[in-house]
Length: 159
Image 1 (cartoon, rainbow, N blue to C red):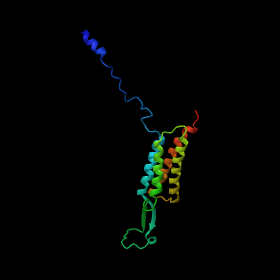
Image 2 (tube, one colour):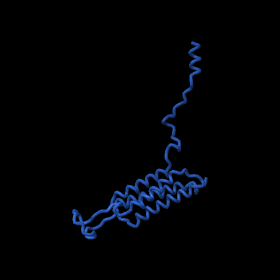
Image 3 (cartoon, rainbow, N blue to C red):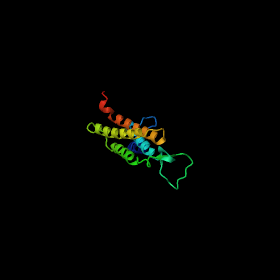
């Protein structure tokens, strides 16, 4: 028996397991600015597949192979030539997430992201109608702008 007690005492100790009741550390869950930026990017790019404009059939040039059952044709973001500026704004906003914000670069990252959010909002505002593509772009641009404000918040928050 004495040998068994020595072998038990010399066995390596197993660290205790983290229980489910303990909260996760903040490094494991994304922050609000990251979530808002990713959501804004998805909404803005996703808006390109939905209708951005309505055109009546009479406004279009003669298309011999065109047959419609209504008087309107809905044009998505690609047909309205918005894919490049909208996608560029989403990509630039996403690249701001590659840098960890510090005291020296936090304002520059927030301003770049805010500029992209304002650009998306202004593109949607110039074509504003109650069509799904435009509404999604407004929501996405607002989320990008909110993410930029959340990223810049520590600069203006005094403890």
